[in-house]
Length: 200
Image (tube, rainbow, N blue to C red; front, top):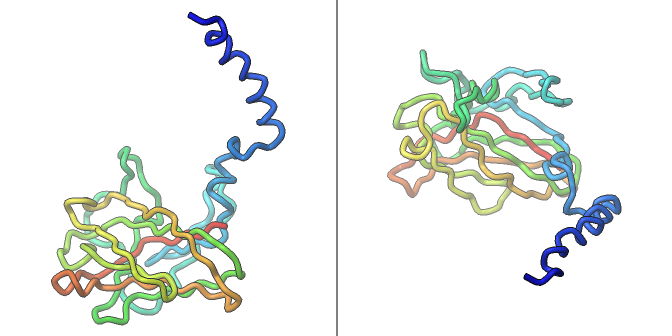
């Protein structure tokens, strides 16, 4: 075997270390990749303080919504878990269900002008077939996108977060997120949301 092929990996080590110390973006930390949390809403529930054991510095605001129904879901249900079976956290233990009709469940967030990423956090807390099947979410006046919380995909009391959605907040300082019945799916099921998290 060629001696150069054997030594090539060793010759790259100083280059990798040099890139690391000159601030190459490929070595960014998890904090940089996830951004800075600027807004948290515990939908359907009270304010929750930051979990300092996890290094959190921003707690969850109480739900400000005035339409739909807030609550803890099905009586006697198990605690919400993640994919590993671990407890998902208090923000998943409450939700707000949208009202009937076409008006939807709107959340209006006040933010400084700029670019953000919004993570919508879901956990189905009731097995009622009228709640949490397929519904839609709309950011501002953008086209809505689908959320599928049907039993076959997301069983009762298991969290599922939508991938972070990039949004721009203009000079109005307002970001409206509306949860809607999907009128194209047999009349649709009531939409819901457990928590909203915004990062820069």
